[in-house]
Image (cartoon, rainbow, N blue to C red; front, side, top):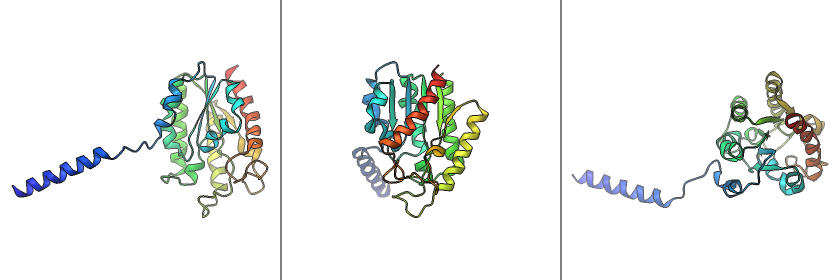
Length: 224
């Protein structure tokens, strides 16, 4: 009986502690919850991604507001987190198109280590979710990078090229418009040159302008 009483006390203490601890929003559903509730319709395109997409509306807000585009990037996210919030941050907004840019943080091994195959599968799942809901898809290459400031031990250039080869092959085989930022912006080392980025990962306004020219052509194709 004494053991049962002690076990009950431990269980009660654990439950009380759990009730006091805030639940971790791993996919960061809360980031855009308010914005999603008040988004202006119609939405021509949702840009889904990580910090590169997150910084885009900040660097060039007119590109989004004047074209009916919505940015749904979250810094640091891997493709699995993007997939989890895809319904809330893309499908529920009923856009005509989605622009998917992923892979950098997967290769940087942010949060959890993922294989290239798992990254590819996550992106394909986002594509299939969009298609099942009548949303046109634009698949973007992972951005060039020869180093990550927060993961200096890694040399990601070749891994990024290999992932992009898988993305491009899938797009070609399935009639999906593919935007190749990588080929247009890489330097001799397979990285993002200083004229487009100050840290080798995140674009400057000049870098975003290059991306805008490429993605606008793709959006014209799918939204005609």
